Image 1 (cartoon, rainbow, N blue to C red):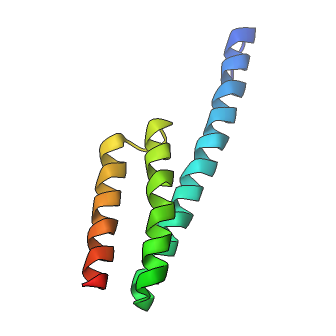
Image 2: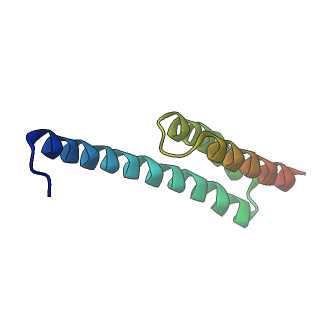
Image 3: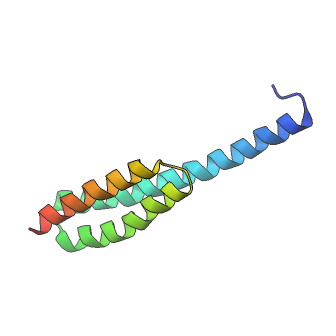
Length: 88
């Protein structure tokens, strides 16, 4: 358990950041899931719309440090590829 006041404050800060990061990660997953569902349904228009909403959300998570930059890029790339194959 934290004894010093600075350690107690650090614990509070970490808890706040963890809550924010959890919220952001959950938000990203929701957007990605919407794209996945549209792809599974074969709905091209919905998939494109969902992808356009999901891409900035993923990149924002990367800039905020919630996910690694390369991870976000990889996820965007793979989703874009799947949306493209659906429309072809």
